[in-house]
Image 1: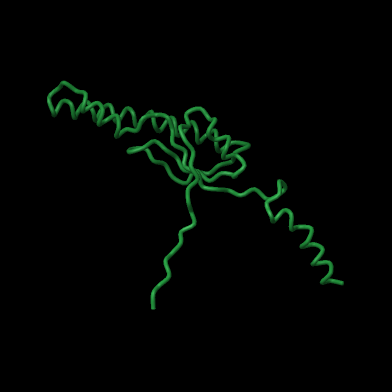
Image 2 (image 1 turned 90 degrees about the horizontal axis):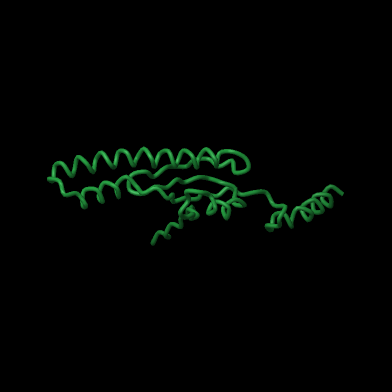
Length: 138
């Protein structure tokens, strides 16, 4: 009788385990590339386009890059604040703010398609987490 009850219970759970719409949400790591230009790109562009001396161009590029880094942080903070709220409830994994402007978050997989529609998001990519290690040879 007890064994029959367990089999019936497992059978009733099978559709949920196979990925039906009633399955438990799965959090996935996602990289969001944002629209603000990265600080390093601003540095390179300002330095390349400058008609000043090399030292002055470098100083101007450094100032411009520092200001851009502030804008990148503001954009990241704004998007993260939105993603931490309902319904997303995302958590930050890491930020990229010098060579590229991106944030990695862990979020319910149901919301991934909606991320592309957020203002300030250029692209969305799932982060691969399955790392296969090669077999050792004898």
